[in-house]
Length: 105
Image (cartoon, rainbow, N blue to C red; front, side, top):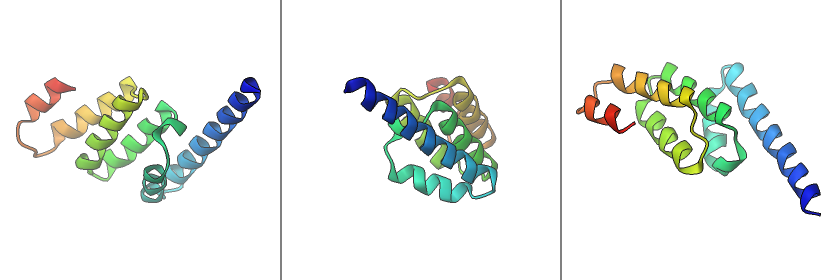
């Protein structure tokens, strides 16, 4: 029974991730981000976090990107890609104490 449930969970995660990535690819990144916020972060793969991070970087939304970074870190979905995306956004932003923030990443 557990193996069957695990298999269905994998399918659910793959479906949610594919939907999120499709929305981003067709230019509906804001909708993808809104969908993401309504669901458990454990449903999405680290690649989804990175794709959302790239979208937020392109739209210059450093605040949401840093929140996404913290969520990925807390849920065990952090990747090197998202870390670099977040660091780039912070370095290009006008937030105070950028160096200190970058050191904490």
